[in-house]
Length: 163
Image (cartoon, rainbow, N blue to C red; front, side, top):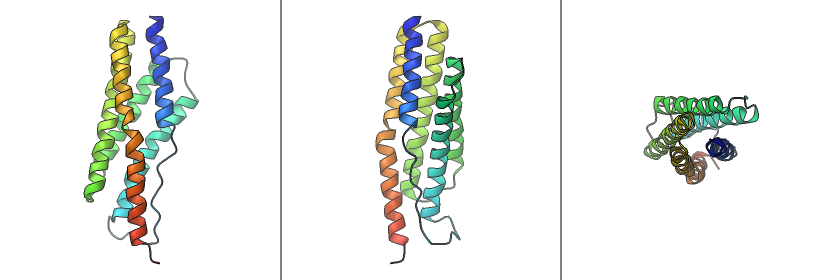
């Protein structure tokens, strides 16, 4: 049991490290948004991702005495991000791919955290370790996803910025 709760503590640290990264940059452009331009779509997608990051950071900075509830709250943050991502009206094909990658990552995070909680409740160390590995796998996607969306949106903003 002690090892399983140690894994839960490590899991929280992993979440803090992954969601503790600097926010994604918003594309800046003087173009007035009259239609859902690629730049405004970048901003919408980025704002959803940043809200999820901010909520997870706030939770990690103000943890409760119940680490299991904190984990469930983190899974709920991921679920909310999924809903918000899926509700975006994106038309840009690259941004649709990025959104799908975010959704896949958040789904993996939510599922892994819920599996970790279940393993802790069942005192199943092997299941806890498996859930923790799944969480690491799910969050690893962010390492390439965030820089990729930043590059794409920055490049898009440069294209549309008058010189």
